[in-house]
View 1 (cartoon, rainbow, N blue to C red):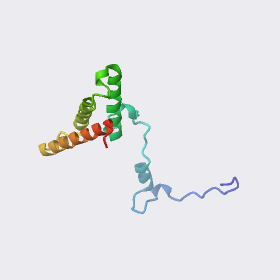
View 2: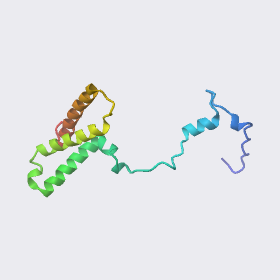
View 3: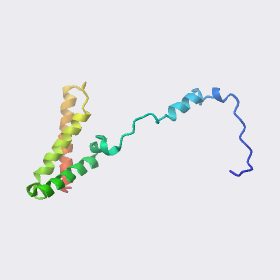
View 4: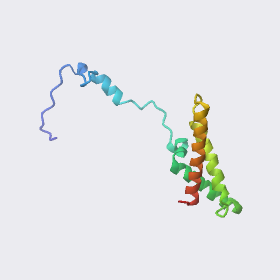
Length: 130
């Protein structure tokens, strides 16, 4: 806008204006524009959500495998069981962090089965198997 533009006219009864659904404008604004200043900020790197993602889990397995191989040669590139064991361990940790306490045994069992399959998918990605 240019410096010569007239100031906008005040809206009469702005406090009582409402949205098309009948919600008072102030209430609608507070629902959409949530104040986040009082929420604790946690870095993504230090949360379990970073590992729960598929790329995060693959990166964790690959990194741990390479570090173990650098520290102790028999656990390195030639040992294909290390990424499988790491993937199963991370898969179980992800499953345990996401399972709900009130889930039925059928849901827990099927969730565990999915976790095992996903663990092998993580291992395949870490091993470069397509």
